[in-house]
Amino acid sequence: MTSATPQDENTAILACTISRDVQNFDLLIEDMEAALGERWGDLGFAEALAFFSQPEADSLQFVALALDGEDEDNLTLMGEIITQAKEKGIKVVLIAEDVTPASLHQLLRKGADEFVPYPLPENELQEAIDRMNKPEPVAVPQAAVSMSQGESKEGALFVVHGLAGGVGATTLAVNLAWELATVSDKDAPKVCIIDLDMQYGTVSTYLDLPRHEAVFEMLSDTASMDEESFGQALQTFDEKLQVLTAPSDMVPLDIITPEDIQKVIDTARSQFDYVVVDMPKTLVHWSETVLQAAHVYFAMLELDMRSAQNALRMKRALQAEELPFNKLRFAMNRAPKFTDLNGKSRVKRMGESLGISIDLHLPDGGKQVMQSGDHGLPLANSAAKNPLRREIAKLAQSLHSLGSNSAEAA
Image 1 (spheres, rainbow, N blue to C red):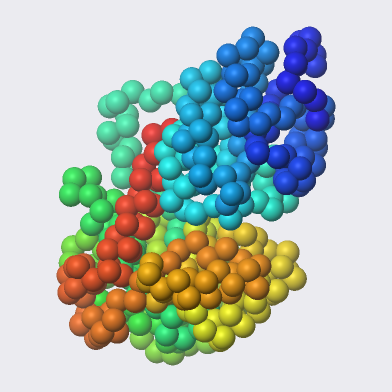
Image 2 (tube, rainbow, N blue to C red):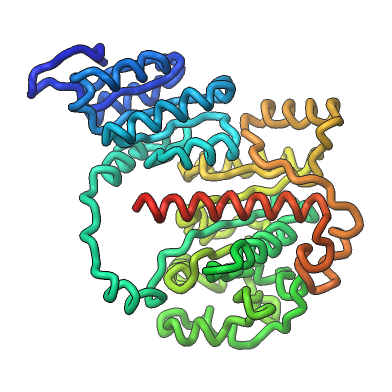
């Protein structure tokens, strides 16, 4: 690590870390040295703003803004750092540990180019650097754009996995998919929900849709599946949401392979802006495929011992196989109210004892939510003012805003 001082052309600083104390991010130091050798420096938050105005900053290719939960009180300052970096043409990668999704959303909207969770997954920083260094896409004439629109997409994949029975995973998956499908009155995104709980999946029940034989036929012969056959297996809910239900009969979870699942995911992402997957509670040999493909992987739990034990089991299982456990975003269903200080303290202790960050707190929606599965309607249609529905709508809006900003940046 070098200080941010003048260098000649061959030793000029190419990047800087910006943090309260870089020693709190020792893995970041190692990855910066691996990627840049000695051609990087370290700055504090206030120092960064002063440094950007100096000639030495002209050689910077990117900055790594590293923050943790203690830094959330300084979001305004960090937003200004991102703004000034972008004005200088400097890329910004966020390195975040124990930071809430709302704070990340705020900083990404300021113009950060990449986000990498801390502790850093192996090679993730180098991959982020490589993505930022890709040349800008060549501008395509407007006429060509209008002809190609809708032919191929690269939709975002959101996965919901319940860590115990009755924790609300399907409720979140179904309502998140519906809120995304209706997030905008004009230019509404195309959304698909896929029920991969092939034994006990109830997405079809929540939306009052029949289960079709075509689903099993498609899954059992993905080698010959194309966009047309995939589309034939889908059903439409209220003209806005496409649904791939679980098969009509209970089938073994291992009847399909990781290659089958990958083909289904790839086909869905090529046709839809957002794909929501409702997973079985059981880990199977294709669970890794979904985890690796997911942009956000919500792990649902409640404030009870069974959820805690299962979260710990899942953490150990993923870490033992060196799978990206950091992709999981733990969501607490029926979370304590804001005024329930004792309950909020229990949630905090639960996260600390398990070594996880519980990022999403979903309120208890009461009987309206418990009965919603039998109504065949999303909460937006049956209980629009329910607190859980409002929180899921906020989540959908946040995810959509992130996707829109990423698309604009690209």
